[in-house]
Length: 557
Ligand SMILES: Cc1cc2nc3c(=O)[nH]c(=O)nc-3n(C[C@H](O)[C@H](O)[C@H](O)COP(=O)(O)OP(=O)(O)OC[C@H]3O[C@@H](n4cnc5c(N)ncnc54)[C@H](O)[C@@H]3O)c2cc1C
Image (cartoon, rainbow, N blue to C red; front, side, top):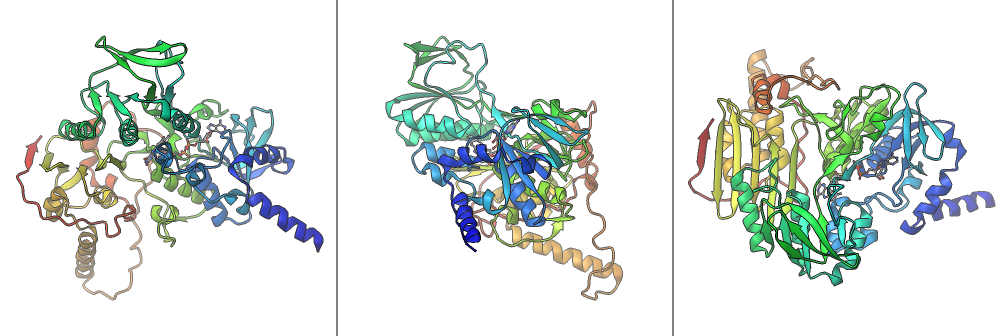
């Protein structure tokens, strides 16, 4: 009896471990030989993809042995919140993605260490300590690293030059902010913009350096980019376009300024490097069976998150999913995507034929819904750029012969739709109100005719619920007409026709990006999918109503 009581107290203490002693406990558990003899599911990396996969796998399979091996010295954190942490709006403890002790409560073994290689023949991984851990299924969730500054850039090692990516980088930033009057931010993407806005919020004079003439050049057209740049300038940042850093000047080991290609010296006490990230594909290189990957594109997986090597999966920033519009595999380095991929990988590794929807998996609804294993469809991204909400879905910059590009701008809002054969190919929405990115994504994924919704999409008044319920009624009526009778019961075979899973092999052809899209768009079956409708958090109905009336742009390609 007393042993049971003692054990209970011990487990409670373990489960309540704080961030500080996480390392100590993780190190001790690494010596646990039980798990070294073989674990059913081994996950490399305790970012959000890895931990979500572990928690979901436990839910699907209560009895399997699950271990996470990670070189990270702290529990899983909510990385998008690091900016709020830097601004002092959140404390370190508030960064935790899951409550403290989740791993213990869910019987997930955490092993602190670095995985060096995979022996796919014997199904085992080797740690830098020399330990071998065998697996039934292996999930590579090794995430991404910051691209940083070029290795040869003079002055890159001065104190005060920070590449912002990990918790340690943001702790470092937060510690030194009191001494910073001027900061230089390098990079042209969303990460750089968010950093600029955070520093402005803190009252730091902010100099933003972009290599190109535009920002977010992979996803925004010139008009949208100008809108964002204007917005950032109005917020108080000094923006330097077409500007490269030639070197960093120092003063007794600390940064004193940045020298640009225009022979300009910008004095500063902080250089924040936000030059993008790349997937950590090392384990694909160090696998005894050839694994399909590309260094900057990630490890190729199918919609079950399977790599081409039996028993090995990949999820999160490291995984390259097929873009159904182009046939090209690419990473989707966003939080939401990592959560959904982690949950889907768990379903696949535990042999589930159904998985939670993305919304349920992220805990937004708390209710599961049985659906075919996730169809990821086209990429999408939603974020805030200062006070601007920004959503991009599909291929909004594609120039496909026969397609029409509609644009609309009014009072600081901008929308761009690319339409081919009455079907949406891509969308950019910028404005104060958040567009319903997932509903727009669903339109593209399902290859829906948007004839009736075009105007509303362009004006930002698209009512997703109304539209999809109308579409359902239309299909039900069509089905009833086809069968000449409607019984109210599903007909055998109604579930057939699920999208074929793309192979893990990349399509390599000589077509250009736009040609590939055209090729795909011409075959509607390739973009039909079953992406569940899940509104963005904070957009309960997924709809905004506005009554603008203004001239729009129309461009026929
Ligand atoms: C600063 C920052 C801000 C962001 N802001 C946003 C945002 O606003 N919105 C948004 O949608 N997304 C944002 N993202 C992206 C989002 O956070 C990521 O897409 C997501 O966290 C990726 O999770 P992951 O689990 O795939 O990888 P990671 O979080 O990178 O985790 C990978 C883990 O694997 C471990 N690892 C790697 N190699 C090994 C090895 N060989 N052995 C053992 N362990 C290993 C690493 O130590 C790490 O713990 C941001 C990212 C960053 C860095």
